Image (cartoon, rainbow over all chains, first blue to last red; front, side, top):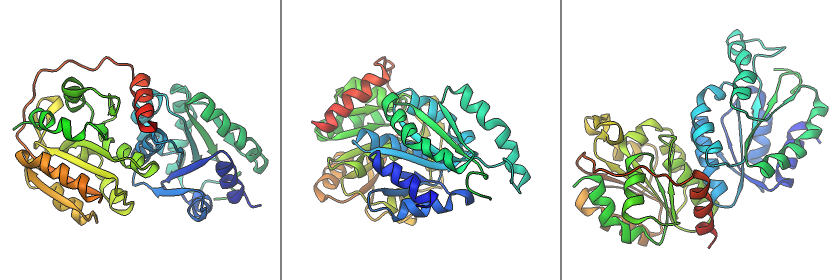
Length: 165
Length: 184
């Protein structure tokens, strides 16, 4: 099973059926796999905070949601993470492309990469970092953990994990 | 008519439905006028009432009415194309358009000047867009409920606020009570 199919398979196995995405080049394959899954309602959003609103509504409607986005979105969504997802205590797995790491060709991406883990730590968001392909083995447990504790949880996925930019 | 007048008139019509209410005074007013388990009050996060409502409507079958404001829709403009392209016929977005940021001191919004939110919603691809006078809002909402079609209502009213207390209910209580009503 390729890595994109594996990620979607773990999502579906954890009853995730509502996924919003904002694209990133590194995430193109997994977004295609989400879109193709008959078990997932894929709703692209125009901005990540909007996506988190959609996920909050879907959760209250009885669906398990997830968001797929780039790490630049941490800068966009701090208020939403704090005043909606965390304040109302809602679960939200966030599969995040960790741009600006080794292999990054675009200098500007590094500017957000250097803040990514610090911001997540400041927000007390449990954070996992997938660097090698086998790190995906933890995804199933991370998803179970997210819906156990009702928190936003970050899964940073870097260029090495995706086998290149 | 100001927003609180509309909410008072509207309360019996929306009482049996799921309501996602905008941050600030709109939620405080609805809470004062007719507090119900079927109301989800936003205590923060300006702009997302329509997104939360759409996500909720897509996830289950009960009717969902998001009560939003012109300022909040301007804050989250990306919501209108998402709504247009993900049709949920159990979803009504009621934009109470008083042309001002009411909760922060009635600073004027662009919706009160050149920008027509109804025209924007139509340009985004929303199919059932109704602009009405404040006085006709209850009928517009009744019609939208009866139509079983996703509808965007822009209700043009005067700006102005009444004195209302803040909501002191714990957010997790609001959410838990609301989820109980969703499942009921």
